[in-house]
Length: 385
Ligand code: PSV
Ligand code: MN
Image 1 (cartoon, rainbow, N blue to C red):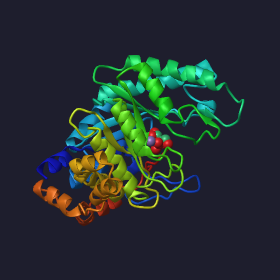
Image 2 (tube, rainbow, N blue to C red; image 1 turned 90 degrees about the vertical axis):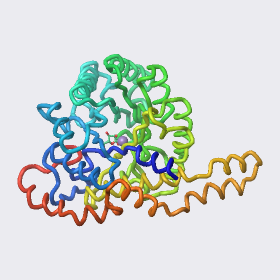
Image 3 (tube, protein in one colour; image 1 turned 180 degrees about the vertical axis):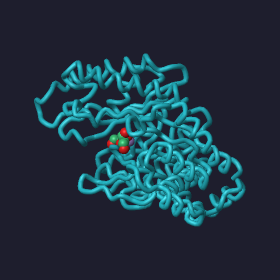
Image 4 (cartoon, protein in one colour; image 1 turned 30 degrees about the horizontal axis):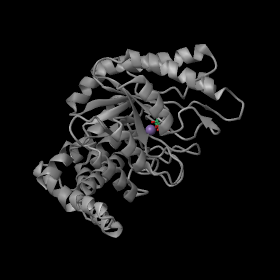
């Protein structure tokens, strides 16, 4: 049990700056009280999540949503709040120039502009001390024949190679895949196989990131996780959950059993061991729930799934598997999943000087009332702003 507790304490879950801003669907973005007006206020909210969970010490930035004049100053502000800057997320999907793609666009001018943005993100990594660049491309086509699928792969490879060469020592990039949306016929990085092939060709500083919402329904995500980890190519997760497509709901909300199965493969593959570099990031949007508690709940959900995965009796499982004991092996697995780990996690927090129930402690703290009163006027931050 001591080992399990130590592993749980060492796990870091990164929250995304955009989770603290307003978000919604294409139908409506509902404004909430107290929402940050700038990246500095987003970091202050993220620091609250860390203060109550104790395991969310870094915050991912999204450029240009978190554009500031002085990134070193932003990093200093984060440190003062007790958190650090995590992955830098690039954005080559919200400029009019990118209607037909960014790094795979037929025009060399647009491709240059997109790659320059990715290089600028590496400059921001240098200024903030971030070691991870996260690349997601909305690039793709809507109609058969619209563009040359093969040429688009060549253009993608060319841009990725340029960015790869710009990475400094200790820096890496994570390539994110997504089945569809906004492209509806053929996305240029639609699946883990495409991302993996590009990363293998590039070298060790290129890894794949698994956004749990980016697959077709029914895809066995834990298999992908096991495979990538075995190949040393699992760079991390963008955790969220979904009922239909890329819903970006709180991780563990739609299918806690799937999250457990994923975390079991992480544990099994050594992904929690020190130095493996698997980044446990959240990529969520809290459209109708309050944002800070939404992040606290998500961090707790990942932690609970991790605790259950660590509780799997690996020896008993291996013995049952070796004997071909199908039902016995499944029972060992389910025993861990069905364990209530909440008392263990409450104990762990108390041992660390934290409140046993982060949700209740945050609600009692008065922080929400304070930001709701203070943050009036100005432009509230939002996904896409
Ligand atoms: C794309 O759907 C994505 O998952 C990428 O990670 C983006 O950067 C992020 O969402 C923005 O919410
Ligand atoms: Mn994502």
